[in-house]
Image (cartoon, rainbow, N blue to C red; front, side, top):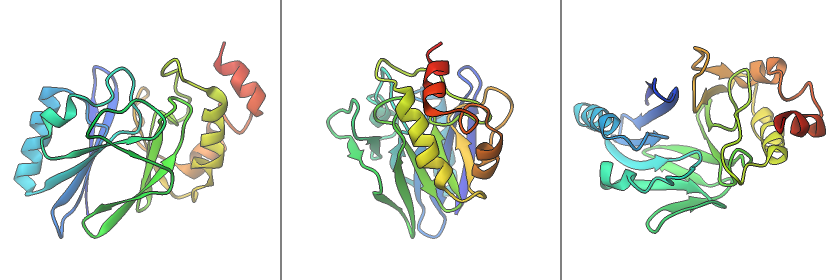
Length: 205
């Protein structure tokens, strides 16, 4: 398998490219709807001989990926169920499996930052978007942001994964591009040290 991480400094945004090298099937996770990044990613796909089948969005705000099909023709945009989606997009639910060549990516529903937030589990790593910030906690994403559901998603979904699972976030604000579930469970100061009510109260202040 092929794995590449991208950093977009203007928004401290992280995006990812995964591919099954045996079949050439590839997916992009959270690529920004930006022509410059699209040119870079398309050039990399062509150089490696990969075919981009899916664009996986961990969440969507004002732009629910409506410009992505133009930037990546032929790739299907995947979004979480429960939020805004457009015709032609595929809304997925918790537990669905998405094929990538001979591999599978599992959808984990992690609502809270937005109602449609999902994470994607592939092999030993999880791509969590803004559901979990490394060593911190994402800020309110939209009017549908629900801190109680965010707390539940992190504790009951992400923190239930094995300790050694690698955590790849949607943003890098502090020079950290990867962590592990075990480290976040033990050291993240926003979740386990606090009750759900305390977390919600602190989040809203």
